[in-house]
Length: 299
Length: 287
Image 1 (tube, each protein chain N blue to C red):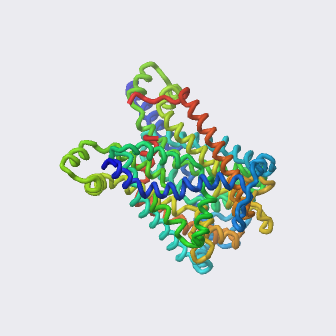
Image 2 (cartoon, chains in turn cyan, brown):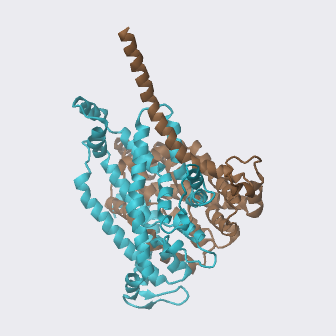
Image 3 (cartoon, chains in turn purple, orange):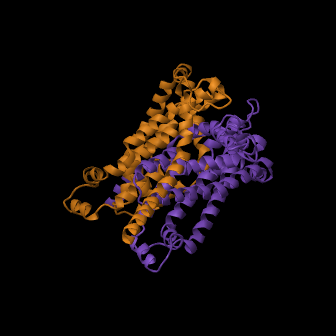
């Protein structure tokens, strides 16, 4: 073997061992489990496509797909827009920029479990911050996490609160847009809105693509916050982790429930592969569409 | 005179124009800060203030005992130590193993260079749900569920660290190749180049990865939920979840516990602000 190859392998060996043990083998095993009836206590028995049939026939799965798509379709763009809006405001050369940046950013690093707890209290229908504030304005606020119509908007609100991480990335890329582009547009008499749509957005479109894909992946796998809120809004005896009228039953939560509460590993494995398929297709479609709206600058 | 008025008007216009962004920024920051303020204020309320009508914003007599209660009712220090221990071990593990592979797919010229990098990116796109169940079963067969092994050991093999390998590799790519080439001509081994040239140059990115990883492990919920089943081994995320299930409605205590859970992260942020921002920039720009 060539010396360089040997060195390369040696340097990669910790990763390669980890890859085989914690990625490659589990992928194979999970694919096999998805065709078996398996509950961890007895050895797997082959059931063919039964688990996949279950995935497509089970009402809860469809409910969870609908709930998850709701988040993917609304929470992702809303977080991106809030993040971009904040970044755009911060990019105006104002004094105290770093203080504002810190204030917007901090909520995004509060651990998910603490965030969920705080928002459960902020959104408390009677004594929460939001409904108290609305009360002063004479508006009767909704029941938020207790009302199936409002549960997911509550989560979107919570997500937008944590848009500081997205903002920081946008801010960095806004600062990289060459000033000369704006200056020549000003000479042509372009206004603020024109400049934003014809210079800013195209210039940062690669970052928008990156953030869009990260956001989609996050919301397709939405778990900790949903798990926390759903197990709280259920009465103690009814541990379905689904929230009011199953409005908080998300795909990753249902998958967890199948695997580690009901020990139906076959069902859960089939669900995992369906999720992989869906996210791959969506990511692929976005990448394919990207040559129409993403422009890579000349640098 | 007319010129004086003109300059006065212009000055006022400028003042207003300078003031308007601040107005927006301040209004928005109030929205972002309010929930945290609400958390802190609630954490020092008595249970009577909690549901008082009209609502009490600032408690007349701050009830600091809520914090004492949290300390008494859950093993807070123990959980903090557990969380800290797991987080630090993961940081050490990844910082030992990830730069090695990042080096192998940036500055070593060998056949596998691009294959390994493709594998790294592949792990990023694979949903964790696919590997979660078999991995759990492996740990079960090894009899290690309930121990810290499943949470720590994978870090030493860079498992689940694809994102950090990516960051490191992107940084390594920006380093001057000439430096490494001339060291090779001088007959230095790859290991020596790695340890004596690459590592000292990479201190900023090492610090960034360390901080980001610490934050991620500190906040992790699913890992501890899957693998820890003794209350004395709980991390703060899991402990807070369990505390919530027994103290539902006792918001003043839940908020005190949340504040105590979040505080170390905020402190870390203020000490390592540069690392946070730099790392995030690097992701975005290279993304």
